[in-house]
Length: 434
Image (cartoon, rainbow, N blue to C red; front, top):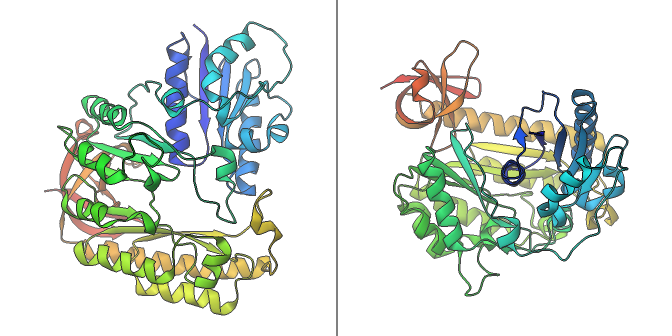
């Protein structure tokens, strides 16, 4: 039985893609092993969202070669799609873009049957329908939280983003298939399911008959045994009244939303080609926070986008200070080859970007701690994760996306527990079984 290992870089959608590729290879007789073990085939599922991501891809390919010196190395994912020449670095046997990923089993088998075959990239096919590319049966993993991909690709053309070139246009999986997938995950012992997508809010617009994310969620929350349904990031414009009503009323929807911001300046948002304004963003967040005071709220912010002045940055700081964020993901802008932003004027000096990033991360950390301190003394339902801290204590994840460390039996892993929060220690809460 040939062995295969995987290394996954980048977003949660990539994690789901890896699960599906693993399931497809296991169905052909491969045995999955840890990335740290020698394998006959090593698959690096790459990311290319930033130049730093490309660097990490190259590092992982080299590590694959060291760990499995006699194995065949396959690079797939977004880097392989956008820059296949760079991905075909020394030691790589096969480069497989996102559009050809469904061919992985047959191509890997051909690779193993041809000793010493050179690096290759298959001739691209017409991109298959979502029902072909996204329906591989992923096996149940040891993770407490299960991930289900509802949608792939993106309809937007943000000036800084390479993802549409890597993932293509938006494509949705059928509601029937997704509801069944969630049922499978719950039956496998996952109380929480995370619904992911590159442009999740666009779900259903490409289907016939057309449907919406709200309509899909109304079906999923009825799945017996599902304790929490958590959503990946959603742009502000996707929060329709119908969707908001469901998100804020269903006890199955986790009280945690990630709403990308990127900038608190309308001028910069226009240069970024973002499909919302600051006023729209503020109205949405204030409505969410008013309806759910203990809401977990996250955002992405890009610092130093070309043309960002001191006034633009101060507008971002002021907006972040005025809204109840519980965590921030702060990214210093860097040029991404193939994007419109590289051609814009007004590139910001790297020293200024680093200083602004440091300041905004500090603000985000203070807001996060303030939120955690507000939870001290409360009782929280948590999903007990498969990870544990060094001294053997358990780690649980609250509905509003905060980790809690507590003493408990390993038998609680992948189940729900009721925790009384006793204090704050770094990024985590300290608690005990209630």
